[in-house]
Length: 338
Ligand SMILES: [Zn+2]
Figure (cartoon, protein in one colour):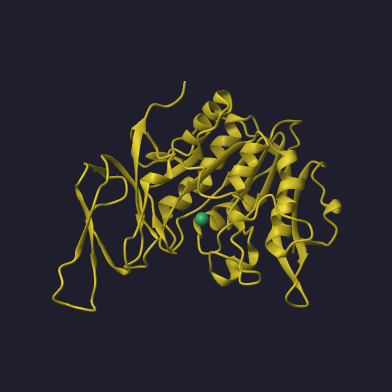
């Protein structure tokens, strides 16, 4: 069983070896705790960089939870240098409930950064990551899967950053997930993303979308598991060469959509019948799908067309789409930074 930790200062990040913990984060709404799983692996081969790998930031996204749990089992400190910090279910209460936000405080963990040691449970967990995890690592990996709302092509993702060296290093590290797409997404959404916070702290911050629809994609789990191992090889934590992950070698495409004007809202409530798949190249005015209104079954569906040419990098996942939800995102292909 993992060791129960009430005082986070008692977590041993420094002694070589592997230690499994559960952080007892006291609840506000009930007499008890969120028990957040944490594994620390400190290599016996000497000092080196730190890498944090996090799953379950959203509780209804499972590839990261599974992949990080597997890393907790498989990483061997005897062959490692440096430090790996593994958190398979960051929003532990949301993961147990299978929901995007925590049922305990209604907070989306991926909008809760930098957190607050005196906030509700999600803010206290994010504050733990900000203050005790980020300072110990160079690389932060946060594994997502689109949840109920969005379908992406298999992609690692990151933001465009003002520091060209940091941006180029993040892009290069993200390629090690060997996904067919890499997605540069907007920083205009809101504040409080885990990766926003890590980037602002100067980290090599990598996100990604490795599945969809509250299911488990075996391909997604494979990339979410082997991607961090490749990153650990690149930063010298693990010996050996980078390994291919994709079943068939494919040119990786870097798609950017830094501006929220390319994230298009659903114009009205309806049943969404997509006509294009995530990852498709689309032309301006191409039919992307139809919105059906069943209040009058004789009414023609509303045709949804591309506002620009580019690559359909995300679209709404489920049939019933409320007005205002992001129906699709079109990005443009760009060159990898040197
Ligand atoms: Zn997510």
